Length: 169
Image 1 (spheres, one colour):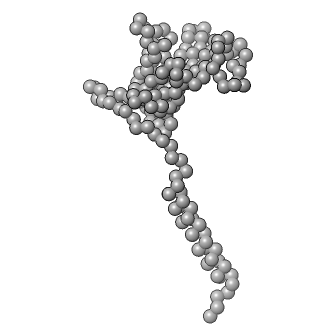
Image 2 (cartoon, rainbow, N blue to C red; image 1 turned 30 degrees about the horizontal axis):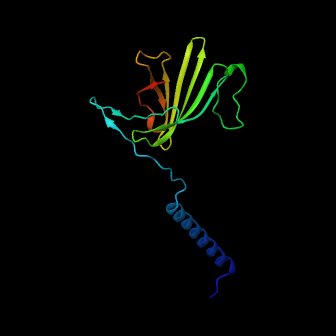
Image 3 (cartoon, rainbow, N blue to C red; image 1 turned 90 degrees about the vertical axis):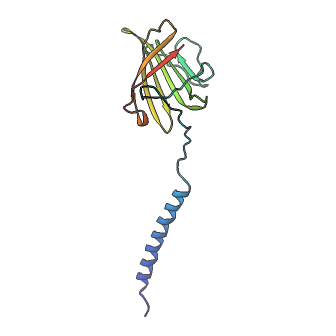
């Protein structure tokens, strides 16, 4: 007995949909959409049981760009620092961030601004595949030449963490 043409067409359509879904799932499994490289973390444990992970920036080699009014700029060609007076006392810099093995693991932005209440220095450090950290530094450097600050917030892996940061400029 022959099946009506509409039933055969419907069965072919359903089988085609199922094969298409199976093929798409197989393709996504074998060829990942994002294969973001992540450098292995170098974490040590302190005597009090906390984790320690160190990052550094080699200045001036790791500086990507500098933006500041009235100073020699290191900006990509065609990019100009804003001439609005609100930007007069602001300096923004981008850096490569390195781990203890000296491998580049992320980027960091450092902003320094002068306000009526005093200077403000902030860092935002982003490590791809891990998250970001926001650090506020004390404006005055210590006698040793170091400026220190606290980790105020983080995202993903760094959410809810506490810690410190020091810079020697």
